[in-house]
Image (cartoon, rainbow, N blue to C red):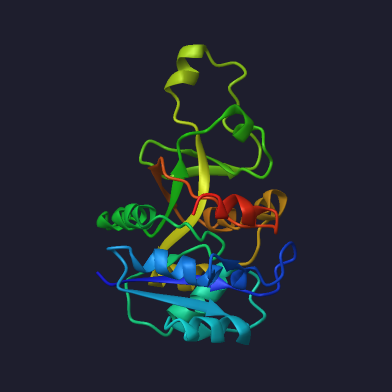
Length: 242
C-alpha cells in the first residue's frame, strides 16, 4: 500500500501572510513540517502543494518535493486533490502546513486506520479534553459511534452532559478533533467535487460536507498533540518547545 503525504501551503493567510516561510531557528516553517512528515515510517513520499512561487522556491532550496497548484482552491483538500490526481498511490495524507513540530507517530497512527479495508477517510481525535476545550469555539469537538466513525463534528460542546450522571460523564470518551486527514485516492477525488452544504456553512467545518453526502470518517484516538502557528503571536510558543 503506497502512501503519499501532501502538505498544502499558501502564502496569503489572512491572519499571518507568508507564514509557511517564517524562520524557526534557521529553517522556514515549511521545511520543519516537511522534515517531520518525512520521518514517518508509513509515508513513501512527501510533497508540498502550493500556489506561490516563493514557497515553491524555498522547498526546492532544501531539496524537497513540491508541486505548483491552482491559486483558486478554496481549501487544502482541493489542493491535495489536484496533486493526488497526478500520482499513483492508494492513500494520501493531508498534513497541516502550520504544525512545525508535527509528530511522525501521529501520522503513522492515522495511516494504520487503512488496515481496515472499509475505511475511506480517517482523522484523529485528541482524548485529553479539558472543560476549557469543550467550551472553546475554536476547538472542534467530535462524537463517534460504536465503530469509531464520526457522528458529528461541532464547535459547540458535544455531547451535552447537563443531564448525565457523573458516572456516565466519566465513562464517555470526549474527544477534540485534530485536523489531520487521510483518504483513499478515489475518495479524495470524489470529495473535491462535492458542493458546500448548510451544516458545513453553519459550523465552518468542511468535513460536515463529506458526512452530509454519506461518507464515513473513521476517528483514531490519540494522546499526542502538537502546537500550530495561526498568528505571529504563536511563533514564540512554538520556538519555546523546539
